[in-house]
Length: 122
Image (cartoon, rainbow, N blue to C red):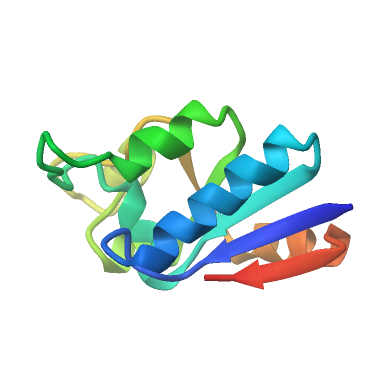
């Protein structure tokens, strides 16, 4: 069974952590998991998001799962998150997409929805 986790909540929300923990648990059970970061969920991919030393860093936790981490490019740009390519295209001074994440179009979400057995939104 394949599961798509649609993450729309900010990384400061407990729901963002629930999404991560569910992905981790499904992967440990050898189940197929895909994720897509959309709306405020894209903020997890902001490399400049500061996390205190006594707290876990959600972006780094996701990157350690070694799965594809697609982020909606439009939602990311609207929230000040960009990769090098889009920074150059839109004349932005720098990029700040966290390591392990990639900016993609909504077509990726449509494909993921079509191929998933179930969709869970956080």
